[in-house]
Image (cartoon, rainbow, N blue to C red; front, side, top):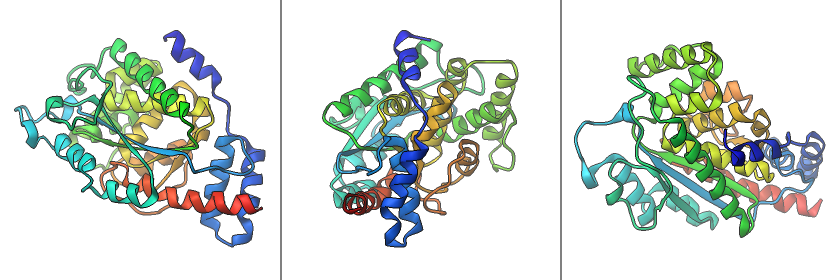
Length: 322
């Protein structure tokens, strides 16, 4: 473990139960249990009795996993590139939701297979896509550590301009397989009933790795992808400075599993936007998170997380009058 990572992990404090309850009471007069739950989550993570939400950012991390490699070069037709271009071009659902709430989107290239085709606004932080975790370790330990540090640096950079809330999303092929593998590693039991033999095999691999005593960094390197590493670092960095992080789908959930494996207290900074699909409900159950919306939304590119931001505005407005 690097010195930077160790310092950040040691800086993460558990969410404040006292501040969570004070924040909940500050909006209780509205008679809206959903807002009370969100207020408690924000207040506990921020260590503040009056939650704040004005300064926020949506980070979408793009990274491809070897387990989903189509085996041919797709160029501009690659699914990750198409999704990234729609976000950058303002036509994606996420872009519409972000505009409505006045929230900027930061698009990160953590390791896209066709990186040359990404929009110019994508910030390059990665070292390329991962390998196929079903055949070999997805990343080296060095690559995983560098991804974590890149995510931590991103959190610090965003916080320099002021940051109250962070919403995250992810795009990239093969993230479903990696989520099953990391879930298996986190619980020590392979997830079943997924309807995807490759993902279930990945879950077996993850559970076996955990059973062999692999540490958090080794598990991330063997099972995760470049987006997983950067997002896990981003979560750790945000948690260390008391910034709550709103999760979207299973790729962000997998990153949360990786982050909490390093620092269990980081779970106190996490807010689940929605129940999601595939492995996400089981990931949230393992993390002890109750989703704000009991539905699955999109593919986890950040739209669900962004939909929480207007609710956070309401919480902040009510709390300021309390």
